[in-house]
Length: 312
Image (cartoon, rainbow, N blue to C red; front, side):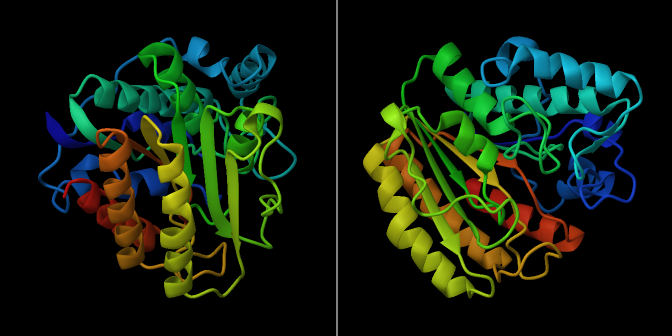
């Protein structure tokens, strides 16, 4: 069994957003031809095709899927009010992100890899069931969770989101679902202004949402302490059968969109702790999907630190 797999597909380059901060250069910096020399001892398998429609409509409305397809093929524009821009090929790129997430889940359950990182864009954790939001088209991490449950037959999935922005789309999808434990550690106040500590889920999902808002300017040591003292024990108590990571690297001190102070070594430490957790709970099964990170050098270096720990 391969320890770690790194997934990337050139379709990601077709999602042309021009000068937008979530831009093609993010995918270029993470392509295997560039990254392999820094991550030489892992596998780079080909992304497999799936019935993406079936997977997507487990978490999104069919009408929304059809709207995105038609909107992109008419030439694109802003899918939402102001910040999720698409071009003609963005639908295909979004399907590529979904296929990569599904491939990652299949790899860990078929034991072809112990853990997997997907370096694909567009990201997904802000996408709501019926609309795009925050650069996100389809909820890749939510789609991966449902795929694991419905195709691979597991019951409990945990999602740890350390992107600097609250994963409001993921939370919305699973807010009343006790089978998915969602944890988000994020800067607050900051867009999208959700993710307060009192948001803990409803009905069958009450208690399976955990938000850790972090004040702007918080130091890395304080953030890591919260991760160690609160996130890890809470997820361990849930005892998932699969650990998913919404791996946004925009809490980095050099990122232009936020005001936190994470570094590559901090991301490495969080990854080590998640590796230990997964070893205890779910046979080491981790699927990590790229979300944010908008300083290109910080993004590349943080991804390398994260994947090196996954491969350790």
